[in-house]
Image 1 (cartoon, rainbow, N blue to C red):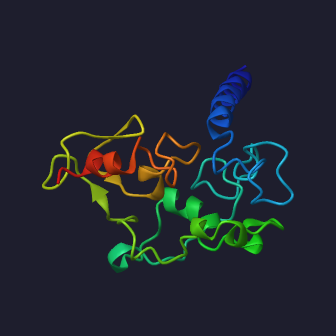
Image 2 (image 1 turned 120 degrees about the horizontal axis):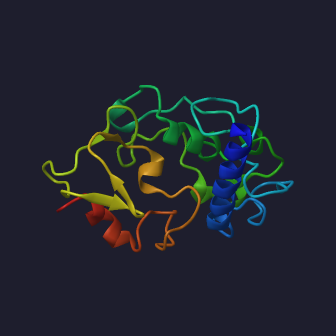
Length: 185
């Protein structure tokens, strides 16, 4: 009975996530980055059984752990960076396990493995709302960022859908609103 309840709950979550990802940049059934296109929206990234790592939710891609972080931080990456870079580090067919090549189709989607010139992400980059330079309350995409949150790609970017900015799946309605969601300057 427990397995049935879990299966029903997972099916409900999967249906909601599938609806959110439909026609987004991560809808590999329709965007042409993956060849051949997956049979369903979720299976290029997720698997119901035999995930490749316990570090990510049912993740089927090979996790990437070789990158340079902001300010030279070379600690082990948090889950939200490993999973994203499994495709966005190179975007090549070999790294993605497909004959499609995101690096050719959308070179802007490739961030590489060197994140030292980006907004701070990675271990030891912690958000403390209310401290100098930060808003007292930080909400991104309707989700509150709590004290002690570790910065990762998914802190700022919505994995499954574009929440309205139209820019790099940011969790904000406009790019300018996005900055002041965290920073009070």
